[in-house]
Amino acid sequence: DAKTTQPTSMDCAEGRAANLPCNHSTISGNEYVYWYRQIHSQGPQYIIHGLKNNETNEMASLIITEDRKSSTLILPHATLRDTAVYYCIVRARGADGLTFGKGTHLIIQP
Amino acid sequence: SAVISQKPSRDICQRGTSLTIQCQVDSQVTMMFWYRQQPGQSLTLIATANQGSEATYESGFVIDKFPISRPNLTFSTLTVSNMSPEDSSIYLCSVRFTGGTEAFFGQGTRLTVV
Image (cartoon, rainbow over all chains, first blue to last red; front, side):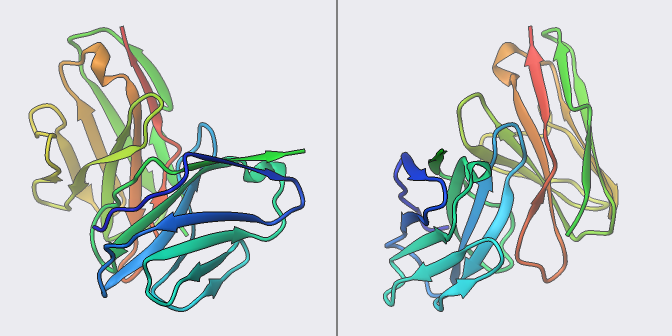
């Protein structure tokens, strides 16, 4: 799996959009970008994934650059419950387990 | 989605003993995985639990230390053998459905070895 680079931590005000960046410059053509988050003392939770087109679901939006070397996860209206560690993971579809990096600790401020 | 139950949710064990962690899923799944999360760290994949055959272990993990069973499509166990304080971690079960893209995780088992 390609390596990803994320900021260690970020703050965001409640109600604002939280934009979490991820660099994956060595991504291969068949690798998807996945985002998971881990709220304290819980197991990771799937958020969204994409290949090259932007994606949106009820939780978030995923913006992938045209060259696919970076992406941004957007939480449109962050709440205190969005405080968590967010992991950007690159893997081929159908591949087995996940390789977690250190992730970004997002802290939503009231 | 899947509902994943892990037992026990936490335990405190004496060094030199072994603990078996159970993972039960509410529906049949293709893939089951075990992860370890050491204190303050990210998750590390231990192995893929294969139904009816030996698990596939990642580099740095061996069957003698982490024996895994998977007798059917909804259940797996991970044993942490001959424990030492360095084994104190959260152990998480994860599953994925056939053709599915996302993985689902249990709440984890918090193990403390004293």
